[in-house]
Amino acid sequence: MLASLDDDKAEEIVEIDLRGRSDVADYMVICSGRSSRQVASIAEKLTEKLKEHFNIYARMEGKETGDWVLIDSGDVIIHVFRPEVRDFYQLEKMWLPGGHTGTRPLEG
Image (cartoon, rainbow, N blue to C red; front, side, top):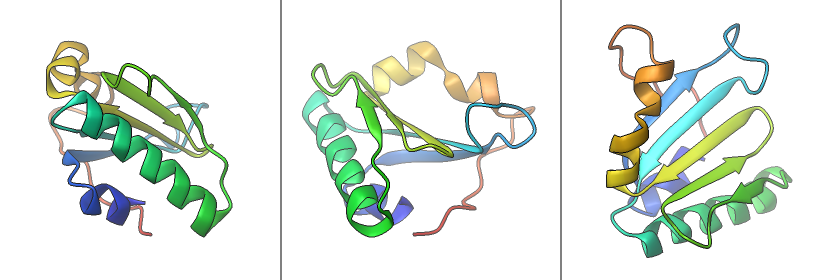
């Protein structure tokens, strides 16, 4: 999954371990695209790769506007933002403990 984000030039990729902190998912991944078009493209390609390689049929919301796309793949929730929208909502501050940066536990 992270390779797909890297391949599609997603920026500022942050992974957050939610185990024990949320019943919704085990991990959250947050990243940015430079434009609405890139945000939508990153999200579309990621959902295609999840389906092809892992047989995961992820739900996606927000692709039409390309400001903030949420991808629910079950155990992992992925947020793809335009930078301005990401700065506005600041999800990292809400979920990351005391200024720690995300690690990259997810491979594939």
